Image (cartoon, rainbow, N blue to C red; front, top):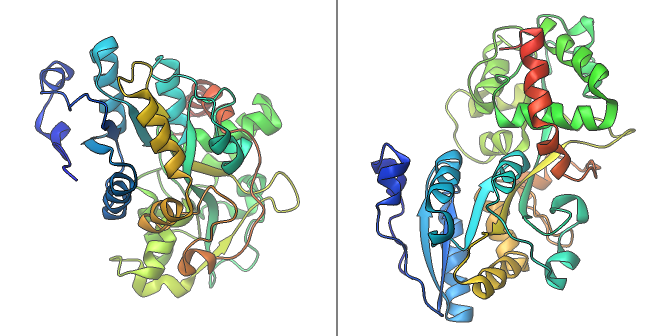
Length: 343
């Protein structure tokens, strides 16, 4: 399989320059992917798809927002057939920009739970992660068991979390708005801010490192960052991984907040039929294993097992809120963070 320009976007500083790049091939036996994922297991999956169908894959990789802007600039002439990115909030942004078209597929509807796909078939989850609570087992004897409890004053000075502009934090607050309303969500966000051990900073791995170093007593992070520390050798994390406990919140309520990597057929896909075939292939057992194992995530197809490392994190009941609600509440979530001064 020929993978075209795997890091092309990194070479260009503007959308204008991006649009000038030679487009991937358009023919009956190809499908063109724009993706913000960059895992070796994805390439193995693409190779398997080509071997099974004879359809060649042309791949353009880049950052999420750059790819969205590129497709907007290309308009009806965009060669993209499928857009793949992480977080339902980003999929919502792409959909709001008119970059997806509806797909009606029995395979996708039967294999992917309703909460993990767009209500009208504009995008579909291909792997999922849970955003959970981690804590210092030595410092915190009674860790919070719910998202609401993160705002409890008894945890003042213990919490570490990412900045308000981070899509994961926007989606989490978006879910809180959907379940509890804007007034309660603002009070909760204020509680998070009041309980911070430091100014919001860094990525999810940095929040976990903060527990190892003793700077943080409680952290909010996606499960796959912790799983990486368990499975591999992550600097500043793996050596102290046994110090960290994990809580899957809201097991007696709405369930644990989950999010996805997802994909959709683009609005002007020149190879639409091939694009639909690819999305359907993404739900196969083998593809689900590739996606999940490549980033220590959970499959979206319930019958497919996660890796032993991920399964070892424990069982949990997931929130069944349709993830499109996260995007709908995204703007208000950012406004709430801004209003209370959460950086």
